[in-house]
Image (cartoon, rainbow, N blue to C red; front, side, top):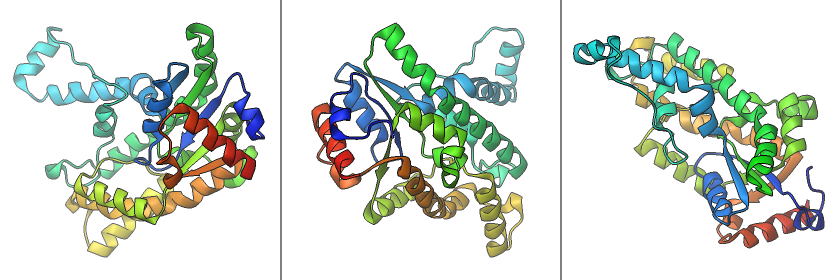
Length: 286
């Protein structure tokens, strides 16, 4: 691990951490809490994906949709309008909108082949963004003078890492050498609340290709459907709980190379000092 003891953590002149876990358990909340103190640099993997690695794909998709409207097509063809993506830490909707949902096109779905293509683009984008972690940690100190660094990772980090391979997995090795890996772990009540929240407002997800293929085939068989008959929202609702269950052991395996903070412990963190002490206590118990 990056820090072997509470004393090493508390006395470190540069603290570097990476939060991982299910979306909705506080990764960005904690990142914002620490950043507000003024000496933590917040590197958002999702923001990096949307601005650096998928920005062109997203804008091209906007343009393709605009070209279907004669009025906008004419303006685009004459370079009379500009179409861009207004991405921010708080608004990553352009990324999820581009990822989309598979199923019936008349209900906003994507053909499964196109959905796979966009999933692969996202996979490569997230891997590249994670590989940029060390670069941004160094840049944050060299240019801006930030002593401490947070990598706020996406919920799908575990899909592209093979934690069972341990440090033979090059991405896991690089990240664990650069940052203290911190799993934000929810309990069953948190999981059920995430499922209820997702059911109210289903959002696009990124999946390991093998998991997606298996879920898609099972859903079609179970409902005796063809691909273009699938209601996109119904499918991703059906898949979400399975995806959480699929990810849980992967997160747990990744946590062997870092520490675990449980959701009930995170509820006590109100200041950066609270966070420092929680990490220190956890390191002493590891």
